[in-house]
Length: 212
Image (cartoon, rainbow, N blue to C red):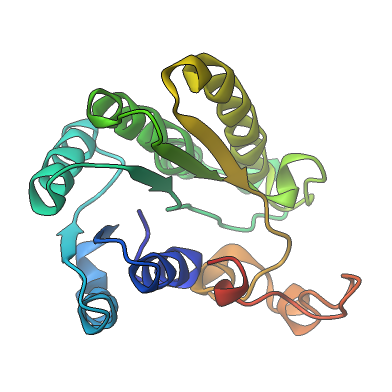
């Protein structure tokens, strides 16, 4: 999910280069970006399936899995990567609509997708969640986003224990600051962006390809 840009795009391309057929989900408004990814997947001689839609809708999440299974001929790897992040200086600035959209995108969607995908996953399959350093070191202006990443880290650990006996691995990546469209579309303030990643040991933000 969120396979048209940022870390999702990097992962989709990396999977194709490793020999996987890949289905990506993205917002319908991001069709040109998705088509670029499709071209890169197909350039590797792999099957690419583009499935636009809004993950905040439970029925769509179920349909997404059905369409992916049909288009790929099965399912081995599920990457819950799509995320919503909007910086707000104060909890008083977080509206109910904001909070709901973040929870639906970051927490409900993986719940719905995993439930729909599980009957298709055989031993040797894997589910991957996208956590964040925000899970254990939250920024003051990411009140809603940070708590969803703590929840992500937790659901990954819980599911890993639950599904291990079925031969299904559950893991997460927990990135620090990474240059993605999430940051420049309201995910961070301009002040933060100017020195984004500068406080890390490498002295710079990470690139999506480094996480692929």
